Length: 193
Length: 202
Image 1 (cartoon, rainbow over the protein chains, first blue to last red):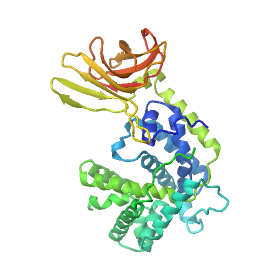
Image 2 (cartoon, chains in turn blue, orange; image 1 turned 180 degrees about the vertical axis):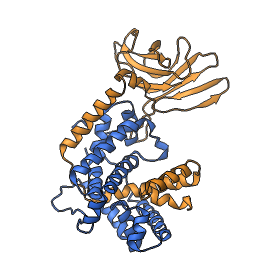
Image 3 (cartoon, rainbow over the protein chains, first blue to last red; image 1 turned 60 degrees about the vertical axis):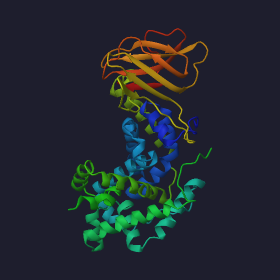
Image 4 (cartoon, each protein chain N blue to C red; image 1 turned 90 degrees about the vertical axis):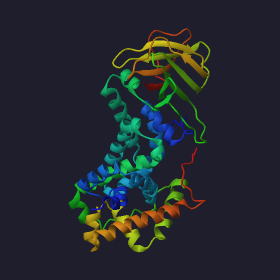
């Protein structure tokens, strides 16, 4: 694997990708491809569809790299947003299958999966923050983000007014932001090489 | 419907298509929502790390890189596509001069800026390129500056050795063109042979 660009920040890699540097796209994939695939798989629940989603998202990174504005947010956030949006589009197109399988498809378990130490750390950190949320907020965030449900679908499914769903999502994300922002738990990419 | 309330749902991709469109139109005009959305973007992206991620099959990496290569060279001929890329832009007015392009600002993880370049355009069309942070050209090589009018061919506009340099550009620089820098053999060449290390729109 070519890790010549390993010392560059994500944002610098996106600038290089904007100038058609393929090795920069490869490096971004090496940093976030696995997380992207795990996310896509959890949302769409089908390995072949998850691959399509990730490929589509990284090609969007390649195509729209010249429009990336570092001042508006981190490159990793931008990339994972592209992945998530595509995964949700796919799962909404596959409505019937999802309704059928949601209850039976458990969250993937770590067993048998060889995890990078850094990825494991991030996962534990996010899961522990989620556990500290009130149940109703955690449920709203998980069903929306991992389940791909729209706010109206959530309101219907949970038998709550739309306004309640909106405030749960907002309160949940705000609290997550505080919990993850705690000193000592700052999330940042660290070279593993 | 109060559009301000949709920020969290939008950040989570939990709006349907028509709601998302309405919110995006609102976002274009509401600074408060843009700021809030930027704040919520981080915890949302963190959720992406909350799942166990099995390794994707190696063919996925290959497929992405091959598709990217095919796509970029399909859009327009590779050289022209590369020239058209803009890595960043800064518009500022200073006295009689206009700073028209901040070309590239690469940062390392330690925050150190690697390369910066600014084109200063005078009202009469004369221009200066200020570059900082480029490594010195290897022996037998030189940096060459190019002025490319919109839709035209690159025209040689000056040579320099690297480091921090201010180069007065030969000829005039048109608006809506591109100023670019490549590494070429000593003495310069009449048309570029490598891809730009720096390029800026004017």
